[in-house]
Length: 111
Length: 112
Image 1 (cartoon, rainbow over the protein chains, first blue to last red):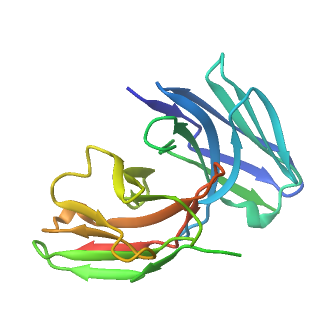
Image 2 (cartoon, one colour):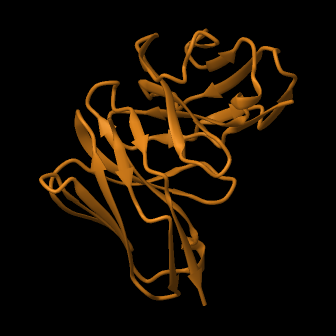
């Protein structure tokens, strides 16, 4: 079967750094994506890792270790607007890169 | 910035009725998808569509579901006979050559 595990909730203060971990057990792995979703909104693409290592995009970075079936999303200089749900999603090489999502991590940023 | 457009934003229908959810993907994208999200739960894959045919579908996408790209711009999801458990947010998404999806803002389907 396919499964992704990520924490259900994370709390942090403005200006802090937070890391959201994701472990996965899947077959046909092609890459690991991260999406942000505000309440009532659509998922928004943040990052994609196909190879091991760190990808940086502004305040957000994402890491992948294929040998450990593990990745994380790192959010720096947290702002109130970062309060949202964050989903890791495995992309499959079959199915034209269909995504299988984790259950999501709800991040609450406090002043 | 290009966006995926979905209509309607909210649809209420009676159990057993047919519904059609509509999507206009980004014009130069090649891969199209439907996902759904039951309130408070994760986003679930329904179907992927490429080159005018279904490339993969999930267990959720049974005979009651169908997709069409009738005119080269619209991409529709039809549910023939809705059930209460079909109530969810339905997201259309498209993808170009890159790996990031662009999701539409969704259609909230309520089956009563």
